[in-house]
Image (cartoon, rainbow, N blue to C red):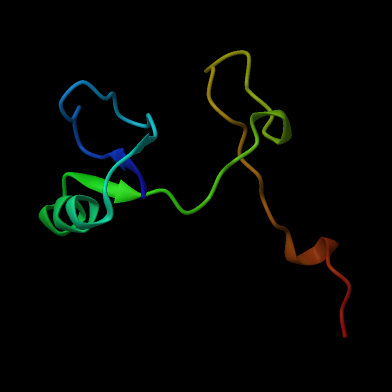
Length: 69
């Protein structure tokens, strides 16, 4: 099962790094709150990076730009 550390580094793995773990061990570590299951992948190319902050730009959903039914 693919998992990733949350909160702080776990063993030799950094936060956000995905690694494979045996299923029984993964469920136990998830229950303890040490790791989280990897369920979704985000494509880096789809996210615009702000040159000022180095973080992804915010995406706003405006009501006035949607079609009314």
